[in-house]
Length: 224
View 1 (cartoon, rainbow, N blue to C red):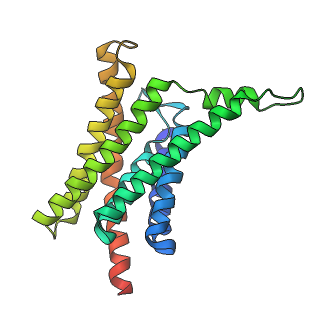
View 2: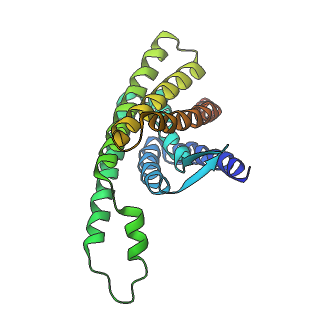
View 3: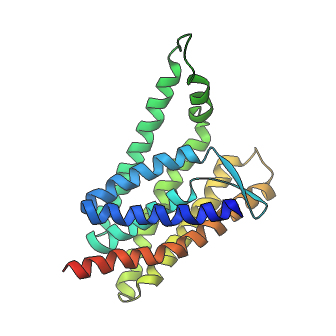
């Protein structure tokens, strides 16, 4: 129960910071937030936890906040702004990976205490990293297109376009990423379980992000 409570608090804090970044810095704040969130998520994903007897990784809320930020950008500033933010975050992730790999190449001094911990955190599996970045980019771009399409068809149904686009793309990302990253490593049923558990958690998180999207839009209307 402790992990569940902490997870709920983490989701509230993460989504609140997403909305606050837009409130203070406008669309540039969301550009920065998406890059920060994806880098932090890639670090936190190294820690495994148990939720309802299932094993999962940290970072789900931060990854989910990139979808919330992209939806806010699409809703308020247009799809092109959202796409630019996703491209910038991919560039940030690639830069982060390159620089951390170079850091590991240095020979540590005799008094160094950080190198082994850095190895544990930053030593990458190239296949997993490529799969992660590729599916992150594809799922977020698809999310923007679905959100925009539903907005044109049902302009007054904010909660529908937010939930459908986010849930569909989260599930797509989890199942294709898990297959690309772990096929040949884990049995098919294990890969399916990993993807299914992650998808269920992210569906719950996606539903929780809807009030924060409304809050962002409401604040804009109040300001006008």
